[in-house]
Amino acid sequence: MQINVNGKSKEVIDDLSVSALINSLNLQADQVVVELNRSILTSEQFSTAQLTAGDSLEIVQFVGGG
Amino acid sequence: MDQLTIAGRTFDSRLMVGTGKFSSNQAMVDAMVHSGSEIVTVALRRVDIDNPQDSLLSHIDRDRFLLLPNTSGARDAEEAVRLARLARAAGCEPWVKLEVTPDPYYLLPDPIETLKAAEMLVKEGFVVLPYMPADPVLAKHLEEAGTATVMPLGAPIGTNKGVRTRDHIAIIIEQANVPVVVDAGLGAPSHAAEAMEMGADAVLVNTALADTGDPAAMARAFRKGVEAGREAFLAGLGQQRQKAEASSPLTGFLRKD
Image 1 (tube, rainbow over the protein chains, first blue to last red):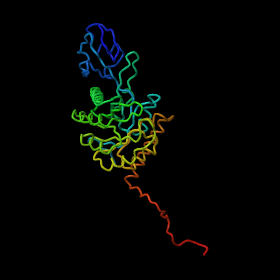
Image 2 (image 1 turned 180 degrees about the vertical axis):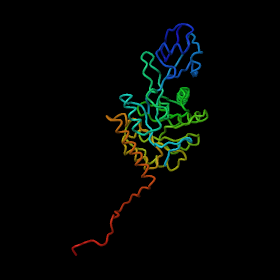
Image 3 (image 1 turned 90 degrees about the vertical axis):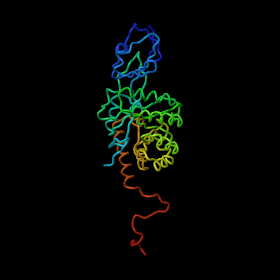
Image 4 (image 1 turned 60 degrees about the vertical axis):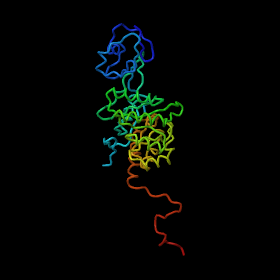
C-alpha cells in the first residue's frame, strides 16, 4: 500500500505497524517522534498503531540547534 | 551562592549553549562540557529516511544537561505549537525555547506570532522561554502571558555582532519580573560580559562556539566572560563621567617650584 512519510510517497506492505516501519528504516523508537495523520503518537502506540493506505506520517528527531 | 532560577528550578551556570553548526559531535560535546552550561538547546527536524543520521541525543548526557528544544523552523504560532508538542512527546521536560522566524534571511522573531504561541503553550503547561525582538512592550506582554523568561536578541542569529540592541535590553532588564536571557548575536566573550554587566540574568550562545577552530577553549572563554560580567554587576559598576577624576590626591606634589 502507498503511504506518505516525511513528504515522500512510499510503498509498504499491508498491515504494517508504525514500530515495524521505524525498524525497517533503521531508526530507533526512542530517538524519534512520530505524527500519524497530524496526531502525535506515544511510544506505546508505535506497536499498536496499524497503518492504512493513504496515511501520512511525520518522523522527526532532535538535531543541533541554537 | 548566586544562582539562576527559572520556573522554580535553580542553576549555577548563567551560560546556555546551543548545539547547532558544530563541525562534529565531538566539537559540540567539547563546547557543552567546557562551557559549564546546564541548559542546552536542540532543534527538531524530519528524519532523512533515505539516510538516517545518528541521533544527537546519544551524545548528550541528560543527567548533566537540561534539554531545551527550540521551535526553530516555525514560521507562525501554529507551527511553533506543533513543534513544541512533538518535543514534549519525545519525553522531554515540557520546557521549550519558542522561536518563530518567518524570514530566513534575517531570522528575526515575529512578535505577533510569538505572543500568540506563548499564550497557547503556557495554557498547555509548557515552561516557555520566548526568543523575541528587544522590545520592552512585547517583553511585558510575554511576561503577562506567563512565560518563564524573556529572551531578547542582541543581534540577528549567527551574526556575531554583539549587544547591538543594548539600550532596549537595558529597559527590558529594568522592567522585567522574570529572568532576562540575552540570546542571539553574541560573538565574543566580551559581548556576553557586557550583557551580564548590564544585569542580564543569563545569555545563550551557539554560533560563536561553533564558528571557532577550538570550541573547548572558546567555551571556557565564554564561561569566564559570563562569570566576570555577573560578578562585576553584583559588585556594582562605577559610573561613567565626563571630567577626569584623579586616582591620587591633587596635593602634595613634588614640584620644582
